[in-house]
Image (cartoon, rainbow, N blue to C red; front, side, top):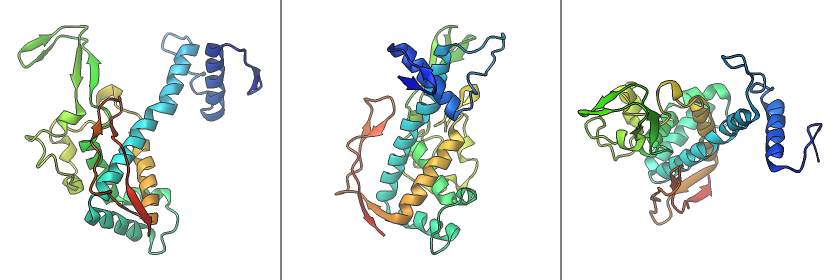
Length: 248
């Protein structure tokens, strides 16, 4: 079979490698193939495949799940939904022309709503880090080679950090320092050197999606059903995600 000018053999692993190399060449300008490591070597095929999986898939389930949760929070509160729609009219104009990239930063209420969604429904419950030096936590010493785990879900609901933490309140982020009031209290995208590199893209993507949906439809919960969290999957999706909508 021909693929990108190369002959692909009927070997599953070889097919995956060649397919990913073609995608990299087509969509990422050979950026990964051209990378030179600190020791002077080029990336192996397995490393390239791993990086491409990260590039293409890491932000798919997380963003789509966060977008779904944002929809349920908006559908469950008509006042907030009307405010989000009114912001679209204010920023884009009464005839609601197509959204422009530069307008995204002006959608401040939608931005706060997304932040609050990520606080209450971070896509991943736990993050683990390998201990490189002995760490003392709560009087216990965690030795080198062990792992420490932090939970965005727990941290973002601590009563000593957040006022009324169970309430969906986008305006808590009117205070720009709200997310930084306590170290690691708000970490939906992780922290440190391994912080998610797709954070800005996620905000742009989800705000664009909901800018379109809000101007076309009105949303409501079906018989008040707000889905519980499905903890059986790595990305914590809504259980039985059904919602009602109608054209504006």
